[in-house]
Length: 131
Image 1 (cartoon, rainbow, N blue to C red):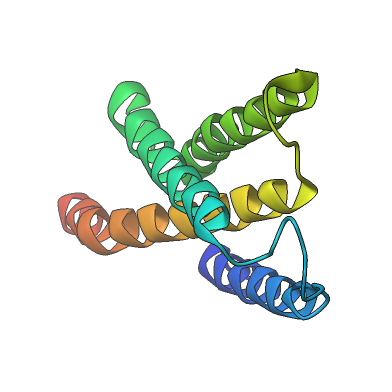
Image 2: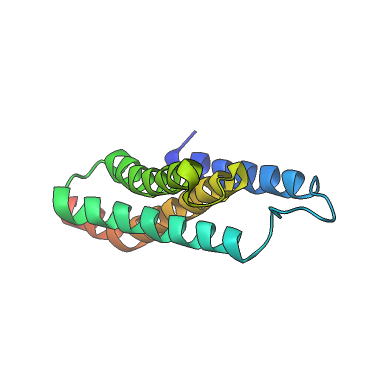
């Protein structure tokens, strides 16, 4: 299975899991699956993951995209887990659902960054390597 196929499959599985879990909420849930807070977790994680991927691409000049993916995931998930640990210490409301949205946002941000990298920079590498 190619890296692209794995990334697409991972994104589809995450979307399916979130959809299935979303149907389990109660009418008077204090921590709903879909709300402003969850949208913020998703969007910040996606932005951090994409930024981490891009930063790794610029700073390391490493051709191996796996390192870029690890850097992006590390930045986003560290921030998300750190936020929930901060909340758990009495400064907010810790939530496993927030972590789920952090993970989905991270996967989305990485998929977008990887796709942009592949579409914009892969052809240039191939043509530069041609005789």
